[in-house]
Image 1: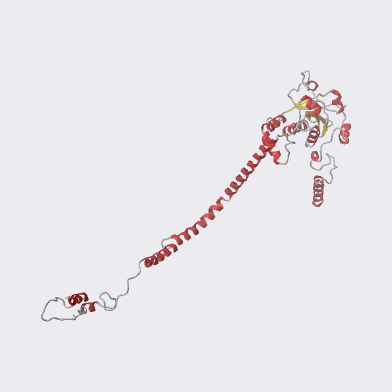
Image 2: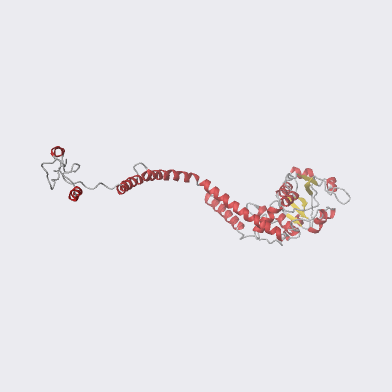
Length: 367
C-alpha cells in the first residue's frame, strides 16, 4: 500500500470519528464506532430492538462453565448480569461495573436496576427517581444493556429470559424476607462471580455528608435561585441563611483583595523604592538646612527684626557722633562759644558765671 493511500484512509477514519462525536451520525451502532465502540451512544434498554437482536443471536443452548469463561475459549459472548439500586451514581458503582465487564474475556454486560416501588419497600427512599437511575446507568461506558424494573431476587425464569450466564456482585450476603442470601442459589449453581467493593464511598455515605452539612447546601441552593418552599425551609431559617451568604460574600471579596495585594506585593515594593528616593530628595529640598523653608524663614526673620527695631535718626554733620566727621576733626574741634551776658559788672564778681538764664534776669529786675 502506498503512503498516499494509507494517509487518505487515516484522514477518512479521523473525519468519520469527528463527525460521530459532533453528532452528525448519532444513529451508528456501538460496534460501528471506529475507535471507541463502547461510548458511541448510550446502552439500549432490554426491550429495545438492538438488545433484542443481540439476545436472539445468542445460542443459550451452549452452556459456558466458569472454567471455560476464565480460559477465554468461550464460543460466544459471555452474558454477565449485575444488578443494584445505583442511586446517586458514583465511582463505586462505576468500578463495580468495570470489574463485571472485565471479569472474563469477551463479556456482554447486562445491568438490572430496581424501580422506586420495590426499592422503597426494601431499602427506603432514594434521592434519584427510577427513571433518573436508569438513565445514569445506561450512560456508563462499561454497560451494554440495561434491564428496567429488575427483580430483587433472580429466579430461573428471569435468567433464561435474558440468557444470563453469570451474575456479578460483591460477596456480602443480601438477606431476603426469610433470612436467606439472595445469591445463595446462584452460588450453588456456580453462576456467581464476586466483585470488590470500593471502600470509602457509597450512596449512604454521600447522603450522610449532605445531612451533616445541611446548612451549607441549603445556603448554596438559596444563592443559586431556589426558593425556601422548594427546599422546605422556614421563613426565619431562610433569612438566617441569606444573611450568612451575605457575610460569606464579603469575606470572599476581602480574601480576593488580599490575594491580589499579595500578588502585586513585589511590584508595590519596587515602585515604593523608586518613589521613596524622589520623596526624600523633595523633603530635603524643602525642609533641609539650606532648603526653601529655611531660606524663607531667614528672610522673614530679618524683615521682622527690621520692623521691630527701626534704625536711629540720622546725625548732623560735624557732630561728635556724626558720620561725616573724622577722628582728626574730633580732636581739633572746640566746644561751642559761651553765651555773652546782657549786663557786665566789672567792679563786682557777683556773677561767677559768664552767662545766665532769663529766669535770673527776671529775678534781678524784681530786686
